[in-house]
Length: 117
Length: 109
Image (tube, rainbow over all chains, first blue to last red; front, side, top):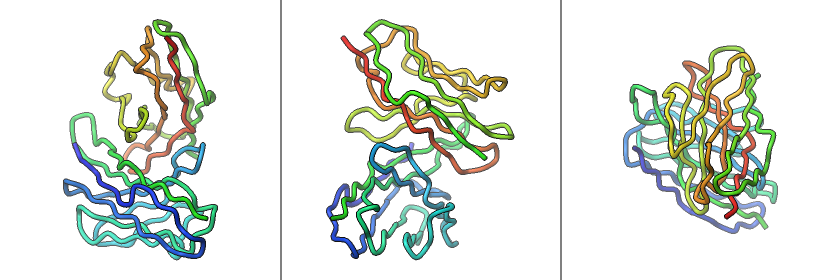
């Protein structure tokens, strides 16, 4: 299995500021994913981050607002820029890992709960 | 377009009763289907996947391609099954997973 650590676990942020969320994995993984889970809603994929290349963003998400770094195979950061109250959400880091006969498994971090005031 | 629909936001059953959490999907190819579970104060984790055809914690799910469904079932619910359950789909050969809105299961004593 893969163990994922996310920091911060929660934070209260002033509107207009930016916050960087860190995601550390205890194993080397090719793909890391960032999801957003807004209150009462499901998980929405923000982007996929591969080491050594630019992140691939989903429709509705742009690099200027959510810049992502992936400097190595065990670490990634997501920055939420120029925050507004609409960015209040849980941000989840996840990875695919395993390679068993049943395929890879997706593992999730505990999430970073951001509240923008 | 890929879509996962979980029609029930909340499902409440008594302990020992059968439980079925519904999941329907929309996808033109052959998807991989999963159920994820999030217990209180824990992180989201994989419960089972259709290609394994396994039973985990008494739960099973059968992929019905004709009805495009992947309902999660358990014959006798336990209080510890109370959690948030998400159905998820990944396209074959792809790497993106999309999630349904989730169903909160509450098992009453």
